[in-house]
Length: 133
Image 1: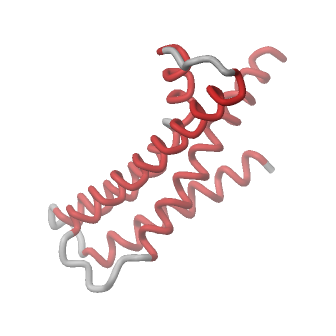
Image 2 (image 1 turned 45 degrees about the horizontal axis):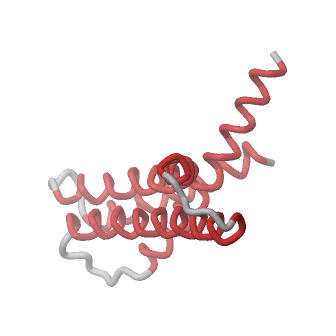
C-alpha cells in the first residue's frame, strides 16, 4: 500500500508542475484577448499553440541545463525523459481550447467560451492546490 501511495505522490508531483504551469499560461493568454472575440477557432489554436511552445521551451531548458551540468551531449533517452516531464503542461490547454472550439461550432457564444475557459483553468489550479495542500 505504501509503494502505491508513493507512486501516486510521484505521479502527482510530475503532473502538478505541468498543470499549474500550463494553467497559468492559459490564464495569461486569456487575459490578453480583446473583446469581442470574433474568431473562436483562432483563440483555440492560439491557446494550444502557446501552451505547446511553453512546454517545448521548458523541455529545451531542462535538456540544455543537463548538457551544461554534465558536459555530455543529450541523447534520445534524455530528450524523451524531459518531454515526459514537461508534456503535462499541454493538458491544461485542452479544456480551454475545447471551450473555444465549441463556441466556434456555435454551441454557445464566445463570451461563454471565455468564461468556460477561465473556469476550467481556475478549477485546475484550485484542484491542484487542494491535492497538494
